[in-house]
Length: 310
Image (cartoon, rainbow, N blue to C red; front, top):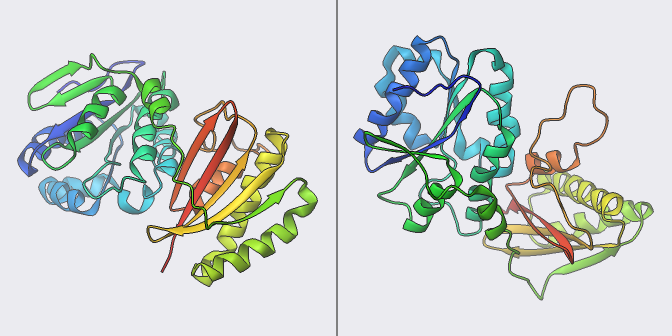
């Protein structure tokens, strides 16, 4: 299986229906990468890890393993802390990566962030010598998810077939899933118009979070999330912003809304270059939250950060 093109970024979706097809598609990719001197990383959920690890035998010790159910619970942190971290460390040897961010059990609230992540990989790695294979369990995933994979991946691997996707259109996917979360009329909210108000806003956030049942150990994380989102809004949108908190689907939802439009869909998804001052606010939000969603239009932007409740 030839998976490397000099000077090119390779990003196929691998369709599989059972463990046998999973291994038939991925074992040659992993073994071929290792035998060719390429660094190999596998970022998959635990059930897939068990299957692939056992089949690799002793070769598994030469692979960098990542639990995607933890590292990729928020899809917005996968590019900087899983994919880019590994690819940048081994940039001279065409890294081979398996990344499975969409698995059966992902919720309807998570899915828009997952599919936008898959689309944005193409921009994040354009021109890089990296191969990232993304497996899709077509037997258990919704057909709409499989259809989206054709749009987010320029190449499809299905059994012995290797073909370019004639439905590849990642920007359309990013735009189509640019969706707001359902509004909650019972949400607690506070308006912010100046950085001088950040301290009382943090106190308000902490008090409301405890009322909504957030674990006390995570309250400082939420305070930091709100601080970064509000600071970002006041600096870049040049408008007042509104902070809203509510409880839904086992999570505390935090929304920061302003009157600006976010023009860079990769904001918060790039590692901060060494020595750069600032520019880490949205990156930090993605690291702290269990899920981040963004809805942006010419009329305004809402950044949503979700934290699991005990």
